[in-house]
Image (tube, rainbow, N blue to C red; front, side):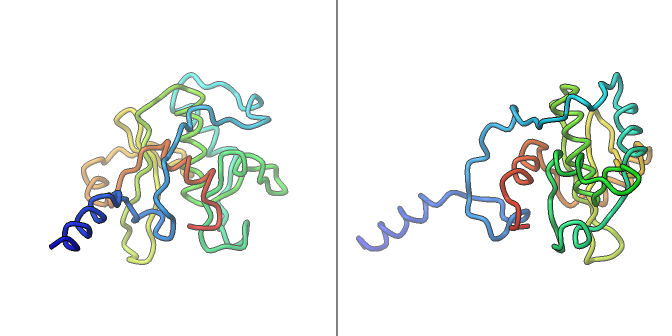
Amino acid sequence: MRYLIIILLLLAAIPACDYDLIPTARPIEIGNIYDYDFEGSEEIPEFETIEDAIQWVAFNSIFNYDNILYGKDDYYATPEEFYYNRNSENKMQGDCEDYAIFLGYLLYMKMGYKDVQIIRLNTSNPFINHIILYVDNHYIEPQMGMFFVDKESLEKQIIKRFPYSKFLWIAVNYHGIL
């Protein structure tokens, strides 16, 4: 009986964690990400509207795969890496989560929107998930530079929502794990 009580106490002491996003990582306190910034970010123009920020990112960037950019199947670039990883045409480059993390940075850190979420979508291909943003009651496809109008059909594809601060923290702290 004593061993059963000890086992139950030990099990109760193990924190519940969400391993869907980072399956190989130990549970760690997320910490304060509100001070995240990078040298050179002052060169990014100020935006008056979400639409302005979306269009600026779409116009000044190009899609590229993680295995080409970083030599890894999946790599969550920080906003700084996305901003400085330029191609020969001086365009920022990355894949869907890199776009979402960077645009989230602009909206969350630079423009003051606090309800910014990263949305993982299920696509028609069961091996491919797509990541977009949600802010101010809008779904945003950053690399296409557009708001989603058909929210009802889009919401049927949502696998998971993540607070932006958690996703940014993972990008900043977990390179090589995802």
